[in-house]
Image 1 (tube, helix red, strand yellow):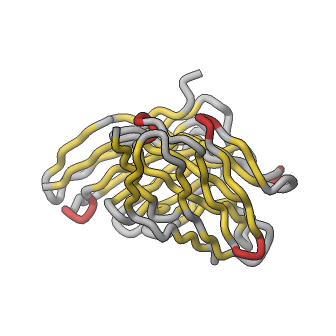
Image 2 (tube, rainbow over the protein chains, first blue to last red):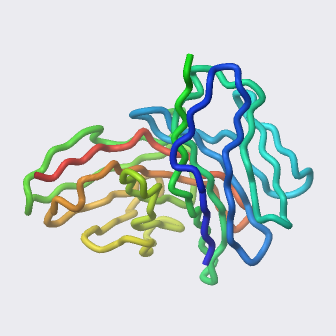
Length: 116
Length: 115
């Protein structure tokens, strides 16, 4: 079974500083990887996804993530954080089960606080 | 396109009461999912459906039932609510995933409190 670990529960950065949120996954086959963002009281919005090809993927709101198979990681980065980026971020891995169903497994999330 | 909608947005139940949460999607998606979100736990899959008339258990199915009578709707039922079911519930959908992986599209959530 697949699993996702987000080692940082809470990160605080200053506005304008760079950001990296860590994500490690465990899955035996080619992973389908996602980052979602959740603002307070809202649903989840897709930031970016990786299925295959170029290991550096660009997403919305200036975010990017790099897939590193050797490290089983899919870390999310942003060069300059804005106050509006304060939210909770979830990494997820998608996988097919033996019965042919498709599911996402989510990490427990990293809450980002931004100091003005 | 409304995407994925959830009804109601908020609900307070007393222990032992029953209720049904409705999820609707207008994207003609095959797969639909119900999750619960609790602080520090991320999202945990309750039940899912791979098509009209089908349902399957997820990671935390106990105390919940589901039905998918129409392709566009996925209902989550609590027959006898317990305080442990206090949570935020999210519905999600995705296209026919047998044709390739897709992201899941999420509804806005239902905040349920059981007293």
